[in-house]
Image 1 (tube, rainbow, N blue to C red):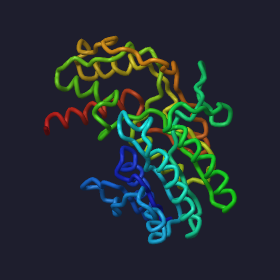
Image 2: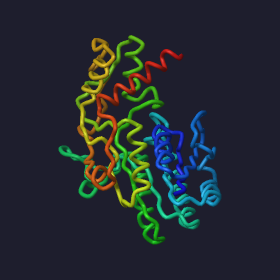
Image 3: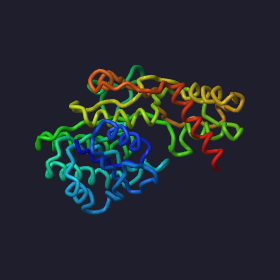
Length: 301
């Protein structure tokens, strides 16, 4: 199939495009700011410009669209007004896809669409949604609009709800990156008390899972996550042990965030059983890979 991937140079887009190509598909990667050396990113485009999505689809005429692009600026995306623009442009992208004969669209959602249960996992079919920030509110509104639109136009829709991620090229101030960078420099790694439980997945697994979902026949919401919950404290402690510098972990040095959900963990039965995807990284292996990346970055800078 001919697959158009937006956000192809992002944290998970680079891995999604690589897997799609390895699976024998014709891959056209589009990104606002392509990174050098990424073989499958061939279109530099700002999808927020008027008509850009329609022009892109009319030129490529893909069989499948994997839409990963959205507002992701670290620390600002929760309340970024561009979330509204991305909602509108994603709808434009879907409309253009339908107009030009695309059979399927797969879009990246977020675990923050859920109303988090105090106990247990987030299930696609039974856990209700809730509005927390502009980011997840726009994402959930987009899902609802596209569900009705695609049904009316006879186009297949999959919505991959991404949970917490880490991996090479992530923003250096994100949790795993910030702790790993401090450790490889031999500096104290300050953390909160870390009592909350989160479901962390390596970015390579997340990208490959989104690619697998895109080319599958599975429709509706699918959680894209590891399915394994771990406290933030245990993740930081594990990084300390992997680096051989556990004494540098400073739990409780930073304040806990107010109103932080105590548990965000995915049920991954749809991803495993229906999509047929199994992650290649366990939590320990994934954290070791991220730590190795930041060690290489420290050497090269």
